[in-house]
Length: 566
Image (cartoon, rainbow, N blue to C red; front, side, top):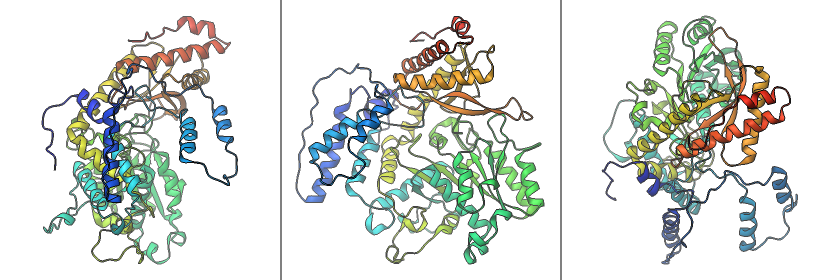
Protein backbone atom coordinates (compact mmCIF):
# COMPACT_ATOMS: atom_id res chain seq x y z
CA UNK A 1 0.00 0.00 0.00
CA UNK A 2 1.42 3.38 -0.98
CA UNK A 3 2.11 6.07 1.59
CA UNK A 4 -0.70 8.58 2.02
CA UNK A 5 -0.14 12.28 1.36
CA UNK A 6 -0.30 14.18 4.66
CA UNK A 7 0.85 17.71 3.78
CA UNK A 8 -1.61 20.58 3.39
CA UNK A 9 -2.31 20.90 -0.32
CA UNK A 10 -4.05 23.57 -2.39
CA UNK A 11 -6.29 23.57 -5.44
CA UNK A 12 -3.34 23.82 -7.85
CA UNK A 13 -1.85 20.61 -6.46
CA UNK A 14 -5.08 18.67 -7.07
CA UNK A 15 -5.60 20.25 -10.48
CA UNK A 16 -2.11 19.44 -11.71
CA UNK A 17 -1.88 15.93 -10.27
CA UNK A 18 -5.42 14.55 -10.42
CA UNK A 19 -7.36 16.40 -13.13
CA UNK A 20 -6.56 16.74 -16.82
CA UNK A 21 -5.93 20.36 -17.76
CA UNK A 22 -8.27 21.03 -20.72
CA UNK A 23 -5.44 23.09 -22.24
CA UNK A 24 -3.18 20.01 -22.14
CA UNK A 25 -0.41 21.10 -19.75
CA UNK A 26 -0.48 17.74 -17.92
CA UNK A 27 -1.65 15.56 -20.82
CA UNK A 28 1.51 13.45 -20.57
CA UNK A 29 0.57 12.49 -16.99
CA UNK A 30 -2.93 11.60 -18.18
CA UNK A 31 -1.71 9.43 -21.07
CA UNK A 32 1.01 7.74 -19.03
CA UNK A 33 -1.41 6.75 -16.28
CA UNK A 34 -3.91 5.41 -18.82
CA UNK A 35 -1.25 3.44 -20.69
CA UNK A 36 0.32 2.05 -17.52
CA UNK A 37 -2.97 0.53 -16.36
CA UNK A 38 -3.56 -0.93 -19.84
CA UNK A 39 -0.05 -2.43 -19.92
CA UNK A 40 -0.60 -3.96 -16.48
CA UNK A 41 -3.94 -5.46 -17.50
CA UNK A 42 -2.61 -6.72 -20.84
CA UNK A 43 0.22 -8.47 -19.01
CA UNK A 44 -2.25 -10.06 -16.60
CA UNK A 45 -4.51 -11.13 -19.48
CA UNK A 46 -1.89 -12.46 -21.90
CA UNK A 47 0.98 -13.47 -19.64
CA UNK A 48 3.37 -11.32 -21.68
CA UNK A 49 5.32 -8.20 -20.74
CA UNK A 50 4.58 -4.96 -22.59
CA UNK A 51 6.30 -1.60 -22.62
CA UNK A 52 4.79 1.60 -24.02
CA UNK A 53 6.88 4.75 -24.12
CA UNK A 54 4.75 7.86 -24.20
CA UNK A 55 6.21 11.30 -24.92
CA UNK A 56 4.23 14.31 -26.07
CA UNK A 57 5.51 16.93 -28.44
CA UNK A 58 5.85 20.36 -26.93
CA UNK A 59 2.68 22.33 -27.56
CA UNK A 60 0.86 25.58 -26.96
CA UNK A 61 -1.16 25.28 -23.75
CA UNK A 62 -2.92 28.63 -24.14
CA UNK A 63 -5.30 27.77 -26.99
CA UNK A 64 -8.94 28.45 -26.12
CA UNK A 65 -11.14 25.44 -26.90
CA UNK A 66 -14.84 26.18 -27.31
CA UNK A 67 -17.57 24.26 -25.49
CA UNK A 68 -18.93 23.27 -28.91
CA UNK A 69 -17.85 23.86 -32.48
CA UNK A 70 -19.83 25.65 -35.19
CA UNK A 71 -21.33 22.46 -36.61
CA UNK A 72 -25.12 22.71 -36.56
CA UNK A 73 -27.47 19.93 -35.49
CA UNK A 74 -28.64 19.58 -39.10
CA UNK A 75 -25.05 19.14 -40.26
CA UNK A 76 -24.50 16.47 -37.60
CA UNK A 77 -27.63 14.64 -38.74
CA UNK A 78 -26.39 14.70 -42.34
CA UNK A 79 -22.97 13.37 -41.33
CA UNK A 80 -24.52 10.49 -39.39
CA UNK A 81 -27.09 9.81 -42.13
CA UNK A 82 -24.27 9.12 -44.59
CA UNK A 83 -23.78 5.78 -42.85
CA UNK A 84 -27.30 4.73 -43.86
CA UNK A 85 -30.38 3.55 -42.03
CA UNK A 86 -29.48 -0.11 -42.49
CA UNK A 87 -26.67 -1.84 -40.65
CA UNK A 88 -23.64 -2.33 -42.95
CA UNK A 89 -23.50 -5.70 -44.66
CA UNK A 90 -19.71 -5.74 -44.46
CA UNK A 91 -17.58 -4.21 -41.74
CA UNK A 92 -14.63 -1.82 -41.98
CA UNK A 93 -11.07 -1.90 -40.68
CA UNK A 94 -10.30 -0.57 -37.22
CA UNK A 95 -8.33 2.27 -38.81
CA UNK A 96 -11.37 3.18 -40.90
CA UNK A 97 -13.60 2.98 -37.83
CA UNK A 98 -11.23 5.16 -35.79
CA UNK A 99 -11.08 7.85 -38.47
CA UNK A 100 -14.85 7.97 -39.00
CA UNK A 101 -15.64 7.94 -35.29
CA UNK A 102 -13.03 10.62 -34.54
CA UNK A 103 -14.50 12.83 -37.25
CA UNK A 104 -18.02 12.42 -35.87
CA UNK A 105 -17.05 12.98 -32.23
CA UNK A 106 -15.07 16.13 -33.02
CA UNK A 107 -18.40 17.97 -32.81
CA UNK A 108 -19.32 16.62 -29.38
CA UNK A 109 -19.57 18.86 -26.32
CA UNK A 110 -16.33 19.68 -24.45
CA UNK A 111 -16.92 19.71 -20.70
CA UNK A 112 -14.19 22.25 -20.07
CA UNK A 113 -13.91 25.11 -17.52
CA UNK A 114 -16.23 27.28 -19.64
CA UNK A 115 -18.97 24.64 -19.35
CA UNK A 116 -20.88 26.03 -16.34
CA UNK A 117 -24.37 24.72 -16.91
CA UNK A 118 -24.93 21.12 -15.85
CA UNK A 119 -23.94 18.66 -13.10
CA UNK A 120 -21.37 17.15 -15.41
CA UNK A 121 -17.87 16.64 -13.95
CA UNK A 122 -14.95 15.77 -16.18
CA UNK A 123 -11.18 15.26 -16.36
CA UNK A 124 -10.72 13.20 -13.16
CA UNK A 125 -7.67 11.11 -14.07
CA UNK A 126 -8.16 8.52 -11.31
CA UNK A 127 -11.72 7.87 -12.46
CA UNK A 128 -10.67 7.68 -16.11
CA UNK A 129 -7.90 5.17 -15.42
CA UNK A 130 -10.22 3.01 -13.30
CA UNK A 131 -12.84 3.21 -16.05
CA UNK A 132 -10.33 1.88 -18.59
CA UNK A 133 -9.65 -1.04 -16.26
CA UNK A 134 -13.36 -1.73 -15.88
CA UNK A 135 -13.94 -1.65 -19.63
CA UNK A 136 -11.00 -3.95 -20.29
CA UNK A 137 -11.94 -6.51 -17.64
CA UNK A 138 -15.64 -6.39 -18.62
CA UNK A 139 -16.81 -8.01 -15.39
CA UNK A 140 -20.25 -7.92 -13.82
CA UNK A 141 -20.81 -7.07 -10.17
CA UNK A 142 -24.03 -9.05 -10.18
CA UNK A 143 -22.13 -12.05 -8.76
CA UNK A 144 -18.83 -12.48 -6.96
CA UNK A 145 -17.71 -15.30 -9.23
CA UNK A 146 -17.41 -12.84 -12.14
CA UNK A 147 -16.17 -9.86 -10.10
CA UNK A 148 -14.13 -11.39 -7.31
CA UNK A 149 -12.15 -8.19 -6.57
CA UNK A 150 -14.55 -5.43 -7.59
CA UNK A 151 -17.30 -6.95 -5.42
CA UNK A 152 -15.25 -6.11 -2.33
CA UNK A 153 -14.10 -2.75 -3.67
CA UNK A 154 -17.77 -1.85 -4.10
CA UNK A 155 -18.58 -2.98 -0.56
CA UNK A 156 -15.66 -0.91 0.71
CA UNK A 157 -16.85 2.10 -1.29
CA UNK A 158 -20.33 1.81 0.21
CA UNK A 159 -18.80 1.51 3.69
CA UNK A 160 -16.73 4.68 3.16
CA UNK A 161 -19.77 6.62 1.96
CA UNK A 162 -22.09 5.24 4.65
CA UNK A 163 -19.67 6.20 7.41
CA UNK A 164 -19.35 9.71 5.97
CA UNK A 165 -23.12 10.18 6.32
CA UNK A 166 -23.13 9.02 9.95
CA UNK A 167 -24.23 5.45 9.29
CA UNK A 168 -22.51 2.47 10.89
CA UNK A 169 -20.99 0.58 7.95
CA UNK A 170 -21.24 -3.16 7.53
CA UNK A 171 -17.67 -4.48 7.57
CA UNK A 172 -18.59 -8.05 8.45
CA UNK A 173 -16.85 -9.21 5.26
CA UNK A 174 -13.47 -8.00 6.60
CA UNK A 175 -13.72 -8.84 10.31
CA UNK A 176 -14.91 -11.62 12.60
CA UNK A 177 -16.26 -9.17 15.19
CA UNK A 178 -20.03 -9.48 15.54
CA UNK A 179 -21.90 -6.16 15.87
CA UNK A 180 -25.53 -6.31 17.01
CA UNK A 181 -26.33 -2.70 16.07
CA UNK A 182 -28.12 -1.89 12.80
CA UNK A 183 -25.51 -1.88 10.07
CA UNK A 184 -25.67 0.10 6.86
CA UNK A 185 -25.80 -1.38 3.39
CA UNK A 186 -26.15 -0.21 -0.19
CA UNK A 187 -24.79 -0.58 -3.68
CA UNK A 188 -23.58 1.28 -6.73
CA UNK A 189 -26.40 1.95 -9.20
CA UNK A 190 -26.78 3.08 -12.79
CA UNK A 191 -27.60 6.59 -11.55
CA UNK A 192 -29.71 8.68 -9.20
CA UNK A 193 -33.03 7.63 -10.68
CA UNK A 194 -32.23 3.95 -10.14
CA UNK A 195 -31.08 4.73 -6.61
CA UNK A 196 -34.35 6.56 -5.90
CA UNK A 197 -36.29 3.64 -7.40
CA UNK A 198 -34.44 1.24 -5.09
CA UNK A 199 -35.34 3.35 -2.05
CA UNK A 200 -39.01 3.66 -3.03
CA UNK A 201 -39.37 -0.08 -3.66
CA UNK A 202 -37.96 -0.73 -0.19
CA UNK A 203 -40.30 1.88 1.31
CA UNK A 204 -43.28 0.27 -0.41
CA UNK A 205 -42.26 -3.23 0.69
CA UNK A 206 -41.89 -2.04 4.29
CA UNK A 207 -45.33 -0.43 4.23
CA UNK A 208 -47.17 -3.38 2.64
CA UNK A 209 -45.14 -6.53 3.34
CA UNK A 210 -48.00 -9.02 3.53
CA UNK A 211 -49.89 -7.82 0.47
CA UNK A 212 -46.84 -7.61 -1.77
CA UNK A 213 -45.49 -11.03 -0.87
CA UNK A 214 -48.83 -12.77 -1.38
CA UNK A 215 -50.95 -11.07 -4.05
CA UNK A 216 -48.50 -8.54 -5.54
CA UNK A 217 -48.62 -4.80 -6.08
CA UNK A 218 -51.14 -4.95 -8.93
CA UNK A 219 -53.83 -6.48 -6.72
CA UNK A 220 -52.94 -4.86 -3.41
CA UNK A 221 -54.88 -1.68 -4.14
CA UNK A 222 -51.91 0.55 -3.43
CA UNK A 223 -53.28 3.43 -5.47
CA UNK A 224 -56.12 3.95 -3.02
CA UNK A 225 -54.12 3.06 0.08
CA UNK A 226 -50.75 4.79 -0.18
CA UNK A 227 -49.15 8.20 -0.53
CA UNK A 228 -45.61 9.61 -0.78
CA UNK A 229 -44.70 13.18 0.16
CA UNK A 230 -41.97 15.44 -1.16
CA UNK A 231 -41.23 18.98 -2.24
CA UNK A 232 -42.66 20.61 -5.35
CA UNK A 233 -38.99 20.94 -6.30
CA UNK A 234 -38.28 17.21 -5.90
CA UNK A 235 -36.47 15.58 -8.80
CA UNK A 236 -38.89 14.59 -11.54
CA UNK A 237 -37.92 10.93 -11.09
CA UNK A 238 -39.77 10.69 -7.76
CA UNK A 239 -43.17 11.36 -9.31
CA UNK A 240 -42.72 8.92 -12.19
CA UNK A 241 -41.24 6.24 -9.92
CA UNK A 242 -44.30 6.34 -7.67
CA UNK A 243 -46.17 5.27 -10.78
CA UNK A 244 -43.66 2.54 -11.57
CA UNK A 245 -43.99 0.93 -8.12
CA UNK A 246 -47.79 0.82 -8.22
CA UNK A 247 -48.58 3.68 -5.85
CA UNK A 248 -49.44 6.05 -8.70
CA UNK A 249 -47.78 9.25 -9.84
CA UNK A 250 -50.82 11.19 -8.64
CA UNK A 251 -50.17 9.89 -5.13
CA UNK A 252 -46.86 11.69 -4.97
CA UNK A 253 -48.03 14.76 -3.10
CA UNK A 254 -45.91 17.86 -3.62
CA UNK A 255 -45.49 20.21 -0.69
CA UNK A 256 -45.04 23.92 -1.36
CA UNK A 257 -41.52 25.28 -1.03
CA UNK A 258 -41.70 29.08 -1.17
CA UNK A 259 -38.08 29.50 -0.04
CA UNK A 260 -36.90 26.42 -2.00
CA UNK A 261 -37.33 24.30 1.15
CA UNK A 262 -40.24 21.99 1.81
CA UNK A 263 -42.86 23.74 3.95
CA UNK A 264 -43.05 21.80 7.23
CA UNK A 265 -45.86 23.56 9.06
CA UNK A 266 -48.89 25.68 8.28
CA UNK A 267 -51.48 25.52 5.50
CA UNK A 268 -50.50 23.13 2.68
CA UNK A 269 -47.51 22.00 4.74
CA UNK A 270 -45.95 18.57 5.14
CA UNK A 271 -47.37 18.26 8.65
CA UNK A 272 -50.91 19.16 7.55
CA UNK A 273 -50.83 16.73 4.61
CA UNK A 274 -49.28 13.84 6.56
CA UNK A 275 -51.77 14.15 9.42
CA UNK A 276 -54.66 14.30 6.97
CA UNK A 277 -53.46 11.07 5.33
CA UNK A 278 -53.09 9.45 8.74
CA UNK A 279 -56.61 10.40 9.77
CA UNK A 280 -58.21 8.97 6.61
CA UNK A 281 -56.16 5.75 6.96
CA UNK A 282 -54.04 6.34 3.88
CA UNK A 283 -50.59 4.87 4.48
CA UNK A 284 -47.74 7.38 4.32
CA UNK A 285 -45.20 5.17 2.59
CA UNK A 286 -42.33 7.66 2.47
CA UNK A 287 -41.24 11.24 2.89
CA UNK A 288 -38.64 12.24 0.29
CA UNK A 289 -36.41 15.19 1.17
CA UNK A 290 -33.85 16.75 -1.14
CA UNK A 291 -30.29 17.73 -0.26
CA UNK A 292 -29.36 19.79 -3.30
CA UNK A 293 -32.30 20.74 -5.51
CA UNK A 294 -31.61 20.19 -9.20
CA UNK A 295 -32.70 23.75 -10.01
CA UNK A 296 -31.03 25.72 -7.23
CA UNK A 297 -28.99 23.43 -4.96
CA UNK A 298 -31.08 24.29 -1.90
CA UNK A 299 -31.52 21.81 0.95
CA UNK A 300 -34.69 20.77 2.75
CA UNK A 301 -34.80 21.03 6.55
CA UNK A 302 -33.59 17.46 7.09
CA UNK A 303 -33.58 17.56 10.88
CA UNK A 304 -36.99 19.24 10.97
CA UNK A 305 -38.42 16.49 8.75
CA UNK A 306 -36.88 13.83 10.99
CA UNK A 307 -38.59 15.36 14.05
CA UNK A 308 -41.89 15.56 12.17
CA UNK A 309 -41.67 11.85 11.30
CA UNK A 310 -40.91 11.09 14.97
CA UNK A 311 -44.07 12.96 15.97
CA UNK A 312 -46.13 11.19 13.28
CA UNK A 313 -44.93 7.79 14.51
CA UNK A 314 -45.97 8.58 18.08
CA UNK A 315 -49.45 9.60 16.97
CA UNK A 316 -50.24 7.01 14.28
CA UNK A 317 -48.18 4.02 15.40
CA UNK A 318 -45.98 3.49 12.34
CA UNK A 319 -42.97 5.22 10.82
CA UNK A 320 -42.88 6.32 7.17
CA UNK A 321 -39.64 5.65 5.33
CA UNK A 322 -37.42 8.76 5.33
CA UNK A 323 -35.45 9.04 2.09
CA UNK A 324 -33.03 11.84 1.20
CA UNK A 325 -32.30 12.44 -2.46
CA UNK A 326 -28.77 13.84 -2.29
CA UNK A 327 -27.88 12.87 -5.85
CA UNK A 328 -26.14 16.17 -6.51
CA UNK A 329 -25.51 17.55 -3.05
CA UNK A 330 -24.31 14.37 -1.37
CA UNK A 331 -20.77 14.79 -2.62
CA UNK A 332 -20.40 17.83 -0.37
CA UNK A 333 -20.53 15.55 2.68
CA UNK A 334 -16.75 15.91 3.02
CA UNK A 335 -16.88 19.72 3.19
CA UNK A 336 -17.01 21.14 6.75
CA UNK A 337 -19.91 23.49 5.91
CA UNK A 338 -22.07 20.42 5.21
CA UNK A 339 -21.30 18.35 8.32
CA UNK A 340 -24.08 16.23 9.79
CA UNK A 341 -23.91 17.64 13.32
CA UNK A 342 -24.54 21.36 12.89
CA UNK A 343 -23.87 22.03 9.21
CA UNK A 344 -26.12 22.17 6.17
CA UNK A 345 -26.64 18.38 6.23
CA UNK A 346 -27.75 18.28 9.87
CA UNK A 347 -30.25 15.44 10.21
CA UNK A 348 -29.26 13.45 7.13
CA UNK A 349 -27.82 10.74 9.38
CA UNK A 350 -31.40 9.99 10.52
CA UNK A 351 -32.60 9.17 7.01
CA UNK A 352 -33.48 5.54 6.31
CA UNK A 353 -31.88 5.80 2.88
CA UNK A 354 -29.78 8.26 0.88
CA UNK A 355 -29.23 8.65 -2.85
CA UNK A 356 -25.86 10.01 -3.93
CA UNK A 357 -24.46 10.26 -7.45
CA UNK A 358 -20.68 9.87 -7.53
CA UNK A 359 -20.91 11.04 -11.15
CA UNK A 360 -21.80 14.49 -9.87
CA UNK A 361 -19.89 16.12 -7.00
CA UNK A 362 -17.55 13.16 -6.45
CA UNK A 363 -16.20 13.82 -9.96
CA UNK A 364 -16.64 10.25 -11.19
CA UNK A 365 -17.25 9.53 -14.88
CA UNK A 366 -20.70 8.41 -15.98
CA UNK A 367 -22.44 6.28 -14.95
CA UNK A 368 -22.17 5.90 -11.19
CA UNK A 369 -25.01 6.36 -8.73
CA UNK A 370 -25.31 4.90 -5.25
CA UNK A 371 -28.01 4.02 -2.73
CA UNK A 372 -27.26 3.80 0.99
CA UNK A 373 -29.49 2.19 3.62
CA UNK A 374 -29.06 2.92 7.31
CA UNK A 375 -30.20 -0.62 8.18
CA UNK A 376 -29.22 -3.50 5.93
CA UNK A 377 -32.49 -5.21 6.87
CA UNK A 378 -34.24 -2.65 4.67
CA UNK A 379 -31.91 -3.44 1.78
CA UNK A 380 -32.66 -7.14 2.27
CA UNK A 381 -36.28 -6.49 1.25
CA UNK A 382 -34.99 -6.47 -2.34
CA UNK A 383 -33.43 -9.93 -2.11
CA UNK A 384 -33.99 -12.17 -5.12
CA UNK A 385 -32.85 -15.68 -5.99
CA UNK A 386 -31.42 -17.06 -9.23
CA UNK A 387 -29.81 -20.48 -8.95
CA UNK A 388 -27.55 -19.99 -11.96
CA UNK A 389 -26.00 -16.89 -10.32
CA UNK A 390 -26.51 -16.91 -6.57
CA UNK A 391 -25.19 -20.10 -5.02
CA UNK A 392 -25.83 -19.14 -1.37
CA UNK A 393 -22.39 -20.56 -0.59
CA UNK A 394 -21.04 -17.65 1.41
CA UNK A 395 -20.20 -15.48 -1.60
CA UNK A 396 -21.14 -11.81 -1.63
CA UNK A 397 -23.44 -11.71 -4.64
CA UNK A 398 -24.45 -8.06 -4.86
CA UNK A 399 -26.98 -8.78 -7.59
CA UNK A 400 -29.34 -10.30 -5.04
CA UNK A 401 -30.02 -6.79 -3.76
CA UNK A 402 -29.84 -4.76 -6.98
CA UNK A 403 -32.57 -3.39 -9.20
CA UNK A 404 -30.25 -3.83 -12.19
CA UNK A 405 -29.90 -7.30 -13.68
CA UNK A 406 -26.37 -6.59 -14.88
CA UNK A 407 -23.83 -4.06 -13.67
CA UNK A 408 -20.41 -3.43 -15.18
CA UNK A 409 -17.34 -2.74 -13.09
CA UNK A 410 -16.83 0.89 -14.08
CA UNK A 411 -19.15 2.58 -11.57
CA UNK A 412 -17.67 0.79 -8.57
CA UNK A 413 -14.05 1.02 -9.74
CA UNK A 414 -14.25 4.68 -10.72
CA UNK A 415 -15.89 5.66 -7.43
CA UNK A 416 -13.46 3.64 -5.32
CA UNK A 417 -10.45 5.01 -7.23
CA UNK A 418 -11.63 8.62 -6.88
CA UNK A 419 -12.29 8.33 -3.14
CA UNK A 420 -8.98 6.54 -2.60
CA UNK A 421 -6.89 8.95 -4.71
CA UNK A 422 -8.38 12.26 -3.57
CA UNK A 423 -9.33 11.43 0.00
CA UNK A 424 -11.50 13.68 2.13
CA UNK A 425 -8.96 16.49 2.02
CA UNK A 426 -8.81 16.47 -1.77
CA UNK A 427 -12.57 16.75 -2.05
CA UNK A 428 -12.63 19.53 0.55
CA UNK A 429 -10.07 21.56 -1.40
CA UNK A 430 -11.83 21.09 -4.75
CA UNK A 431 -15.29 21.80 -3.36
CA UNK A 432 -14.05 24.81 -1.44
CA UNK A 433 -12.75 26.16 -4.74
CA UNK A 434 -16.04 25.69 -6.60
CA UNK A 435 -17.96 27.23 -3.68
CA UNK A 436 -15.64 30.25 -3.79
CA UNK A 437 -16.19 30.56 -7.54
CA UNK A 438 -19.95 30.27 -6.97
CA UNK A 439 -19.75 33.10 -4.43
CA UNK A 440 -17.80 35.18 -6.96
CA UNK A 441 -20.39 34.51 -9.65
CA UNK A 442 -23.17 35.44 -7.23
CA UNK A 443 -21.38 38.72 -6.51
CA UNK A 444 -21.07 39.49 -10.23
CA UNK A 445 -24.74 38.73 -10.84
CA UNK A 446 -25.95 40.82 -7.92
CA UNK A 447 -23.69 43.66 -8.97
CA UNK A 448 -25.27 43.90 -12.41
CA UNK A 449 -28.58 45.83 -12.49
CA UNK A 450 -29.77 43.82 -15.49
CA UNK A 451 -29.55 40.46 -13.72
CA UNK A 452 -31.80 39.09 -10.98
CA UNK A 453 -30.66 36.31 -8.63
CA UNK A 454 -33.68 34.16 -7.75
CA UNK A 455 -32.67 32.28 -4.61
CA UNK A 456 -30.22 32.11 -1.75
CA UNK A 457 -27.46 29.73 -2.93
CA UNK A 458 -26.39 26.93 -0.59
CA UNK A 459 -24.23 24.94 -3.00
CA UNK A 460 -22.64 25.48 -6.40
CA UNK A 461 -25.83 26.27 -8.34
CA UNK A 462 -27.16 29.70 -9.24
CA UNK A 463 -30.49 30.49 -10.90
CA UNK A 464 -30.67 34.01 -12.33
CA UNK A 465 -32.22 35.87 -15.22
CA UNK A 466 -32.04 39.00 -17.31
CA UNK A 467 -34.82 41.23 -16.00
CA UNK A 468 -36.23 44.51 -17.24
CA UNK A 469 -39.04 45.79 -14.97
CA UNK A 470 -40.51 47.75 -17.90
CA UNK A 471 -41.13 44.53 -19.81
CA UNK A 472 -43.95 42.09 -19.22
CA UNK A 473 -43.05 38.77 -17.60
CA UNK A 474 -43.76 36.84 -20.83
CA UNK A 475 -41.37 39.15 -22.70
CA UNK A 476 -38.67 38.73 -20.05
CA UNK A 477 -39.17 34.96 -20.31
CA UNK A 478 -38.85 35.10 -24.09
CA UNK A 479 -35.62 37.09 -23.88
CA UNK A 480 -34.03 34.69 -21.38
CA UNK A 481 -35.06 31.59 -23.30
CA UNK A 482 -33.83 32.88 -26.65
CA UNK A 483 -30.63 34.31 -25.18
CA UNK A 484 -29.64 30.94 -23.74
CA UNK A 485 -30.09 29.35 -27.18
CA UNK A 486 -27.93 32.09 -28.73
CA UNK A 487 -25.26 31.47 -26.08
CA UNK A 488 -25.32 27.73 -26.77
CA UNK A 489 -25.00 28.26 -30.51
CA UNK A 490 -22.06 30.64 -30.04
CA UNK A 491 -20.26 27.88 -28.13
CA UNK A 492 -17.75 30.02 -26.25
CA UNK A 493 -19.23 29.17 -22.85
CA UNK A 494 -22.28 27.35 -21.57
CA UNK A 495 -24.89 28.10 -18.92
CA UNK A 496 -28.09 26.07 -19.08
CA UNK A 497 -31.67 27.31 -18.84
CA UNK A 498 -34.57 26.15 -16.72
CA UNK A 499 -38.22 26.80 -16.05
CA UNK A 500 -37.98 27.75 -12.38
CA UNK A 501 -41.12 27.66 -10.26
CA UNK A 502 -41.10 30.94 -8.39
CA UNK A 503 -43.45 32.39 -5.79
CA UNK A 504 -43.17 35.44 -3.58
CA UNK A 505 -44.55 33.77 -0.47
CA UNK A 506 -46.58 30.81 0.79
CA UNK A 507 -49.89 32.20 -0.50
CA UNK A 508 -48.57 32.91 -4.00
CA UNK A 509 -49.59 30.10 -6.42
CA UNK A 510 -46.35 30.71 -8.29
CA UNK A 511 -45.38 30.48 -11.93
CA UNK A 512 -42.61 29.01 -14.04
CA UNK A 513 -40.15 31.65 -15.22
CA UNK A 514 -37.36 31.18 -17.76
CA UNK A 515 -33.96 31.52 -16.10
CA UNK A 516 -30.28 30.82 -16.59
CA UNK A 517 -28.97 28.01 -14.39
CA UNK A 518 -25.26 27.92 -13.62
CA UNK A 519 -23.46 24.93 -12.11
CA UNK A 520 -19.87 25.73 -11.12
CA UNK A 521 -18.15 22.35 -11.03
CA UNK A 522 -14.86 22.15 -12.97
CA UNK A 523 -11.69 22.45 -10.83
CA UNK A 524 -10.10 24.59 -13.55
CA UNK A 525 -12.96 27.10 -13.63
CA UNK A 526 -11.70 30.45 -12.34
CA UNK A 527 -12.95 34.03 -12.20
CA UNK A 528 -11.76 34.43 -15.79
CA UNK A 529 -14.09 31.70 -17.09
CA UNK A 530 -17.00 33.02 -15.01
CA UNK A 531 -16.49 36.53 -16.38
CA UNK A 532 -16.38 35.09 -19.89
CA UNK A 533 -19.61 33.14 -19.34
CA UNK A 534 -21.48 36.13 -17.92
CA UNK A 535 -20.21 38.30 -20.74
CA UNK A 536 -21.56 35.70 -23.17
CA UNK A 537 -24.95 35.98 -21.44
CA UNK A 538 -24.79 39.75 -21.86
CA UNK A 539 -23.89 39.54 -25.55
CA UNK A 540 -26.57 36.92 -26.19
CA UNK A 541 -29.25 39.05 -24.50
CA UNK A 542 -28.15 42.05 -26.57
CA UNK A 543 -28.51 40.00 -29.74
CA UNK A 544 -32.02 38.91 -28.75
CA UNK A 545 -33.01 42.47 -27.88
CA UNK A 546 -31.83 43.58 -31.30
CA UNK A 547 -34.15 41.00 -32.84
CA UNK A 548 -37.19 42.01 -30.83
CA UNK A 549 -38.80 45.03 -32.39
CA UNK A 550 -40.89 46.10 -29.42
CA UNK A 551 -38.83 48.05 -26.85
CA UNK A 552 -35.56 46.78 -28.36
CA UNK A 553 -33.93 50.16 -28.81
CA UNK A 554 -34.89 51.31 -25.31
CA UNK A 555 -33.69 48.09 -23.70
CA UNK A 556 -30.32 48.16 -25.44
CA UNK A 557 -29.65 51.73 -24.32
CA UNK A 558 -30.30 50.67 -20.74
CA UNK A 559 -28.11 47.56 -20.90
CA UNK A 560 -24.69 47.77 -19.26
CA UNK A 561 -22.44 44.94 -20.57
CA UNK A 562 -20.13 43.17 -18.12
CA UNK A 563 -16.50 43.73 -19.17
CA UNK A 564 -14.51 40.53 -19.63
CA UNK A 565 -12.19 40.16 -16.66
CA UNK A 566 -14.61 41.72 -14.17
